[in-house]
Image (cartoon, rainbow, N blue to C red; front, side, top):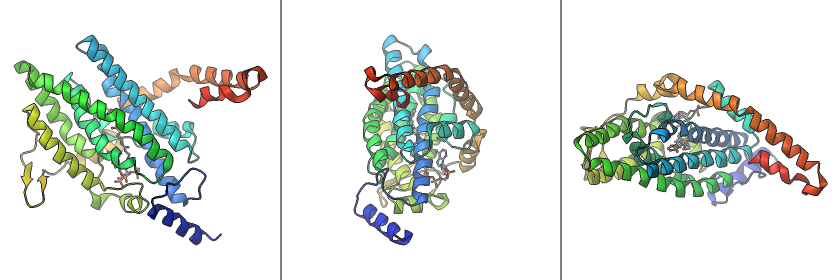
Amino acid sequence: MPVQDLDKIFQEKIDDEIKIEPKDWMPEAYRKTNTRQISQHAHSEIVGMLPEGNWISRAPTLKRKAILIAKVQDEAGHGLYLYSAAETLGMSREEMINDLHSGKAKYSSIFNYPTITWADMGAIGWLVDGAAIMNQVMLTRTSYGPYARAMVRICKEESFHQRQGFEILLVLSRGSKEQKEMCQDAINRWWWPSLMMFGPKDSESTNSDQSMKWKIKRKTNDELRRNFVDMIAEQIKTLGMKLPDDNLKWNEKRKHYDFGEINWEEFWNVVKGNGPCNKQRLDARKKAWENGAWVREAAAAYAKKKASSPASGGTKGGALVAA
Ligand code: FAQ
């Protein structure tokens, strides 16, 4: 069948809300965009473990430590579902990891900021996971089947993460003068970078038009950012804290909050690798990859042994490598 016809059938499926599955025909650019977005999303989850991992050994109580460990483990799980979803498009996990390590593939700008105080754990949960959910609820309806299905489970876990972050800040906001100040300081530092997570303004977004047409994205960067501001501007009232934006004001006509201008120079600087922690984050990932080489080798050797042993039921051991 000529490519134009295949293309037409493909777009009709998208328009009819039929999910695209790995073995279906798809335009190469659709495959490429999904591989890019899903793998970058996976990298974000894995790199995203580092800022919080920094506080596991210093969490204020045993209960807080257990919760934080569980949350960071959830992020690892999200990374693994997403790498698996990206692999169904034909790129190997090793290639994806190489692209992360070489700086070719991006990951979310937000994870290049330092976690200085315990309140940062609250701010990350509330604001960073909050922004992530705003974006990811939309992605549960994305057109590529494996990505959409991965997002359903991820969103359930993220909403727990957001609540635990808010609760950390709520406790601090009702604590001593120092705790209140720590809470406000964390909000001040994480607010603007959280808004940057949604990506450049629509007018600067190179991928949005095509991704909306293919229903990879269902809402634009600016729409999601606006919805996030509306949500947080209300929730912060419960904390009795302030968002660091003098231009934040309810606009009765628009039925949305107006807010100040994002520092786009800072955003692009971080995206290009020059943020406060970019080097530290990539170095940590590369080191973890090198240190884990023996585990991958052992798993591959075990899988090979299992596959060649008839008593074990053939290929069962292969699951170890894929997991
Ligand atoms: N950081 O044309 P657009 C999480 C790049 S998960 C770095 O608008 P697109 C969970 C973009 O890649 C957080 N780069 O791009 C968690 C593109 O460059 P490229 C991650 C960014 O793809 C919580 C260029 O700018 N979530 O937080 C960023 O249509 C707590 C032009 O931009 C996802 O990945 C950025 N913020 O829209 C974990 C969700 N924004 O690739 C641990 C899935 C844009 O062409 C702890 N991704 N760029 O070279 C998406 O929804 C989209 O990819 C967007 C960007 C909305 C992020």
